[in-house]
Length: 319
Image 1 (tube, rainbow, N blue to C red):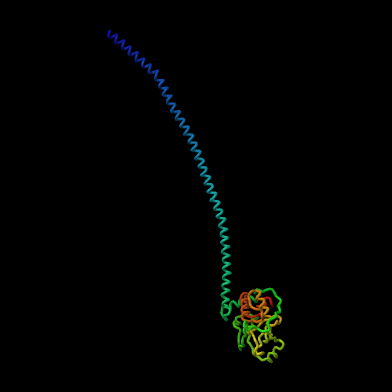
Image 2 (cartoon, rainbow, N blue to C red; image 1 turned 60 degrees about the horizontal axis):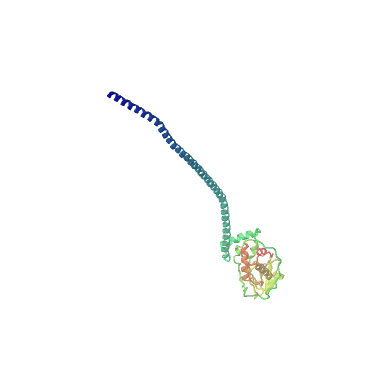
């Protein structure tokens, strides 16, 4: 009996175990399906994340592409700007060099002119010093230019006849005195045949008979003083009249035997027009007139004789 009860109990237990196993087998697919379903959702979620990530990557790539393109464009612009600047710089450098060269050349030119004016002023301060080397050198050069016809000449003018005062103004042109054996100062430096008359000049004192016997009709009177004509020049006839008035002791070159006072007056008028002479046209070769003649001679490359010589009269256009 006991065995039967045990057997029944065992059979019941076995049946229960089998049933539990079957029930467990039936529940596992459902659980696996639910587990798979739960697994699919994260996968889907993961897929969505990947899609978002892919989109973000695409956007980032686009942005990177734009940035790279912008960088390339900026680099090209900088390169083009640099090239343009270099080209402008290269174009500007020759222009600047050319302009600088022109300015330098002008500056040299203006400097050369200033140096010439300075040298001219320096020579002008020493023109009255006789026998100085620089004056002799300048005078020799001027004579060479005059001989070659390079001295500036004015247009020829027709000499005028001036109505001059009958009495000299001795205050402006004091009388000079006779000096035996006198030589014209500086004449030893005046080279050339046209200046030989100044180098050889030696004042002579003779009485009236001597002068008439030697020069006769070649004597004229200016302000009461006799002058004699010889080889194109007028000379004072010292001794003809012991009280004769002369403002200058030396030769005076004349054109077509024009009287000495008219020659002087024409020279004064010509120098007055050119701004060298500011005195009165009086026919007297006094200190003011001689100074104006000297200034004109220096400015025109002539020997500074301070009197009317052939080159000066020709330069003025009177002869």
